[in-house]
Length: 508
Image 1 (cartoon, helix red, strand yellow):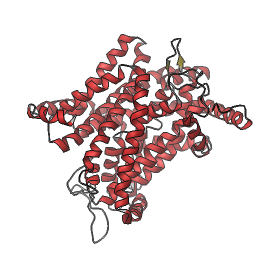
Image 2 (cartoon, helix red, strand yellow):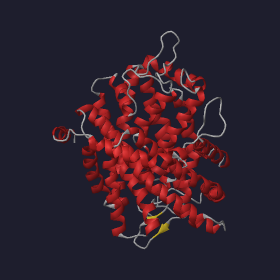
Image 3 (cartoon, one colour):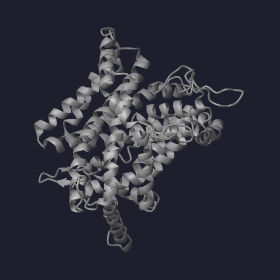
Image 4 (cartoon, one colour):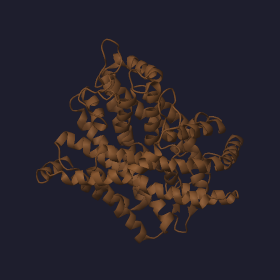
């Protein structure tokens, strides 16, 4: 791809189209972004706290307590399920437990792990990492709740295909319990999911992929990257969930292992700084270490970026997990526990550690605190970089050629996230307009057009819109989960009782 982009750039130096796209995009979405991220009417420790972050924190905490720390109790069983120990090939569904996990992970393990973590650390300091990890651990319970419901209330069709996700458990689950408003919530969620798939699952990925590629081959208009990505994405998503699953089950393990290995190499080279880096993370979590807003600023950034990265409570992953072959809804809820752990606790932490020990964040030698920029709103970096460029600069401190490896990871992360989110958006689309090949093709074409827009727009407008739409999904989804969590608890108690009694046995 890089070899193709270089000659193309020579014929397309005029970036005015990029600016026009960005201006139109930012002016049309600003009001919604302001609504979603408006602060609470009172300050927390002297800092404004977005109400949506509090909403996610409370939801994840409630589910953790209500289900008795299920994320810890069921962790070992989750690994057994992914290995296929309890899989029955005769069960209804389209993909295996591993394929469902890989597809959902490809939607979460994306540029939020690279660019999003860099944004959090550059604004909230290394201490934001602590809150990211905590959010990831708590979010495992949110993921368990929504994915269990996704399988329980999915639609199974005569041709073997399935459709599931929050739209279906809101409609069917509320009706089953005699609760009003399920249909309204489902429609709202579907609308937000469509825009979320076009924003966080599409434009943000294309935007940061272009930033990394152009940083290596030289500056050129973003729409070129967008066109190339759009063509490749379309060739995969036109085949549906089975085609997506076949790609993600190969791409996700490869890209995840490659990225972690690269990060480990840098950490091993700087092994003497690892203890210091963890010290910065824990100290910064409660003091701020020179960050605007103190520890609350670190907390806000940590939870925001963790939510954007692992999507726990958003409801998106429930759509992918609903396609699994199983007759036990709880099994896929248990499998989904692994997502926030892999995404946030492992991969995001790796990124934050590399950034912290690399020296790309400016530290005052007299005090040991991180230095704020002139505006006092973010930590100063050596070259003024942010987003994926900051992560790239941190990786380059290990070996000069590491940004090329990172570029490959960025391309794979962006690609896999886009194809998974295309499926999420598609299922929300068909829920609203109905099933049918022509209707599905219409959405896939729209999705690919937004790949081009995302690559051409600027980071600020894209990331604000992405966060707002994804968090809007969480508002609707968590509301529904509160009403339906007794259903999940009954399913959970029944399943683990039968597992303990030996009624549920391994198939291999």
